[in-house]
Amino acid sequence: MLDSRGVTPELVRVVIHAAGEIRSYERAALAMERLLGVSTSAKTIERLVGQVGIELADLRDSSDEPLSGQEKIESPPEVANVSCDGGRTRTRQMGQGPGMHGPLWRETQNSSFERMTAQTSEEDPHPELPRAFCNPARVANIAENTPLIVESVEDQNVSHESSEAPQRLVRTCLSSMADADTFGQQMKKEAKRRSFYEAERRSFSSDGLSWNWSIWRNYFPTFTPILDFIHALAYVYAAAKAIGTSDKHRWACYLEMSTNCWQGQVDEVISAMRRWLQHQGIEDGRELSEDDPRKAVTTAVRYLNNNRKRMDYPRYRRMGLPVTSSPMESLIKQINYRVKGTEMFWNDPDGAEAILQVRAATLSDDDRLDGYLRRRPGWPYVPRFTQPSLAG
Image 1 (cartoon, rainbow, N blue to C red):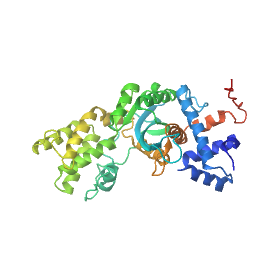
Image 2: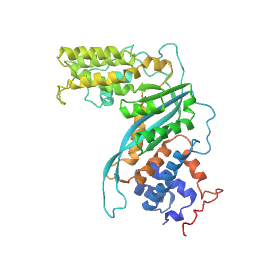
Image 3: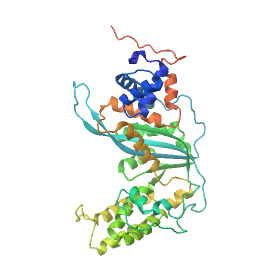
Image 4: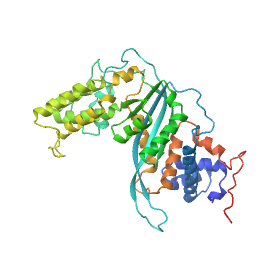
């Protein structure tokens, strides 16, 4: 049985990767014993993650250099895309003795930095609504709503995904318990490390949450702001269900409005919704109860109107920029897989921050985690740092 003082540098590397990928420290310890024949306790793994995670956080905040210590991006990417979104985890107070003290749901801040390649075009390379958004079952799943009982649209004007869509080359990510403004500063440093501010084409894609766009205004104002099309689609779908008089009619409304949004005609969608509300005698929706289905239309109008300047999708496609932040949504799920669960409670704040650093590092496509561990004191050929004595 090894404790944290008896773990070799190479085993530290294995432990950190296992802890970042496997759902719990207990399962990571079991996997290491069965696969490597190494008996390491869950508590030892937890202590090592705590040490390395906080070291990674300190490194993140102390330097503008690449976190791996090796990779230096000499030229900016062809396309630089930044996304951010919030997640959740549960924490507990430290130093309170045995038992669970002060359990609390806390917000996590997360971001994705995608180095991409894409062609530009004189014309919209993908003007028709993609087939994925014309399948009733799939659209209902995307919109997290009940499906409409209609046949899928099979039409020559409904196209597949464009082969000219931006292609991701490298993704790096950040995750933290920090407040939004501090996290925005962390994002700015990461973007500088990746030479994102020097890219010819820069985009910031997100959903409609106000804190995301405050980060864009404060730290990425030169990046083209893009509302995630899938979030817009979800609001349109909910509104169409309220407007239509039958499933066939609702689906037709959805297709017309989603196609208009895809083609950059969001003003027409807002106007059509407002005309319907006027016909219903509804002013702004505040007079409606929350369970009134027509509330979905007033909510969609407000959402689309607030984000209309970020919905010029034909222009974004011509520029070779992404029009969805679905990779960011996927990243949140990947982070939550490791940090969010019914019986997961992280020490607040260091335990939560440490596992977020390790998880984000394992999900990054660069060499930042192994690069740091190779430079960490104790690794072969790296002099061990000796902590000066605090004794008087």
